[in-house]
Image (cartoon, rainbow, N blue to C red; front, top):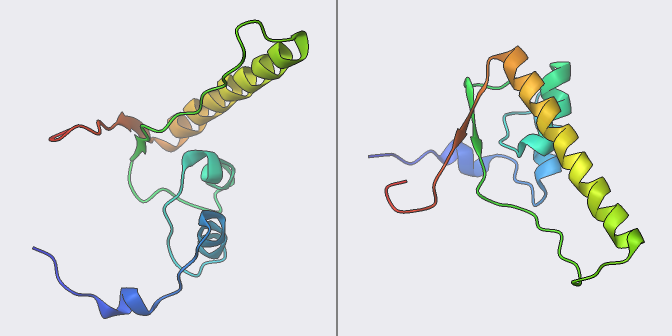
Length: 111
């Protein structure tokens, strides 16, 4: 299975995902990126999804506070939660418009 493709090894390499996405937007090649980083470009059409599905990352963010957080900390937590909800709403709408299905991936063996 597989082969050796020297052309891929000779291409540009980026240490930041947004640099790779920017190069793809500029027409310099292709890039894979987290939905949060490319959703606006997909919506505008400056990037296209090559496949009709996206894979949900098992990664997650957690907002951790002391047992009795201050009102200010609670407000920040509420704001972060609302931003997450807005993103999910936008992602759902953009994916529906583009015909992209969101799939879950298990990190377990045989997933």
